[in-house]
Image 1 (tube, one colour):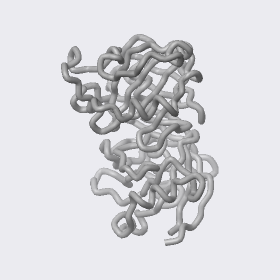
Image 2: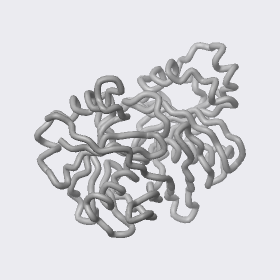
Image 3: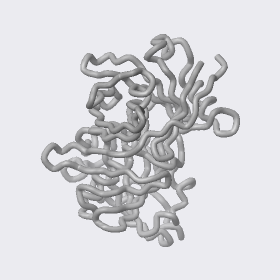
Image 4: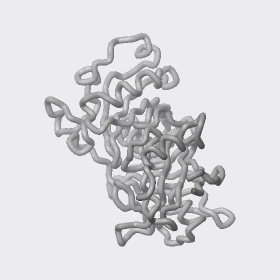
Length: 299
């Protein structure tokens, strides 16, 4: 089975061609395959696997199906969808612009730029952010005002015991929840490097109020147009970048007056330019897509 390893600012996945071989997503145990391929010691090493498939929506050019490193299937990946567009352009010869990629979030339009005949970077129309708690989903015993979880007291439903790390990272103990087709919780702090993400991330991810688990982001605002983000990704753990998380973080920052509606979001793997268009209410994400290597996995 041939594969392509690609990443979007360090958020890396193994890409499989189910467009040429449509039976691929039916003939193997993809949950198990995601686990063994993604293992960074005994496999290829990745945050998960993504299948590039033929679309089932007639308006789309190509479809993505993604599995996290723990084998769970996810709705969407912002960095991954740029690489799906790159795979489709570079390897399948699809040339429509904007390219339309079918995801668990729906069909997304992707504008792109090329260098030396290959797709190098892309701007993804991520659609409107979802703020209704029931749709994210966040299950609160008592509804939040307007059924939106914006700057909501963290301790009210996530019982994190007071600890030194909170003071060290200058944590603002309030959370904002956003869905970009997948669930996110955003917390703001003064020193993002001081957050013990490996310990705190999985605790928040699996809280009972998040029935579908959640991605966890800690954000340090540097100015109205710049912020640093660290991510604990649902099903994958600490990642170098999360595209949907950068979008959710920008939305959370704009909703709470911490960020403008356009900002550079600096992640450990690189920078994404995120804009929340006031006219359309759509979030636009711009960033690179990079191929690392190709290989063959034994069937």
